[in-house]
Length: 290
Image: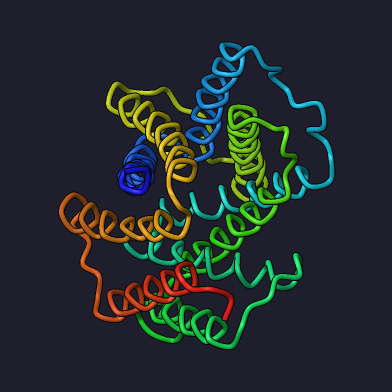
């Protein structure tokens, strides 16, 4: 029953993440991306601060400025900025499919930075997964766009964040880690604003929020918080090897949202590449260190 509950919550988390991507893409039709990140970061951090207060724990973790958390924060900012840019300018299907390579990069990073052992079978799966990513990006073809590189950089940022999370202080609660993550969303928005000012001073960085924009903005913040909660529950109630592969249903949700709601039309290379990335990731997660 724990595994069934875990798989349900993991599926709900992936649905919430896809909703977060969809609402971000829609919201940026009305307001600048930097403004969206700042507001959603404030809303998310206030939510987790309230949770910490309700749980009678300190709002700010005592060692928030230690080396591991600083590294985690830098990767979080990198992931947030580049993946948000990718979602804003790429089809959701492409960006979400590239993001599914995150576990491949995490495993490879664990080899180099955490001295974990990975056998030749899993190395083959890792490189096969990267072939799938290349099929999605389609370098050298008419289907290639610079924003695909942004999706790759975002994926690397999130992989680095996940590696650093594994080394985060064990005494840091999920609420504290959640608020810490949303602080980085605020900083990401500020950095994006500064960058926009430098390259395009005449560009509007903050606009009035219409009712329609407000709906998408609030939905984006709610989806982000819900995804975090469901993911946390999923990883705590079930066996990791059973629950984790369900994260790949995100590709199916992204395809559904992209095709039905956004009118996207992914080509054969994207579909095949997505399948290769997903199967490689599932193999790595569900097998021993062979």
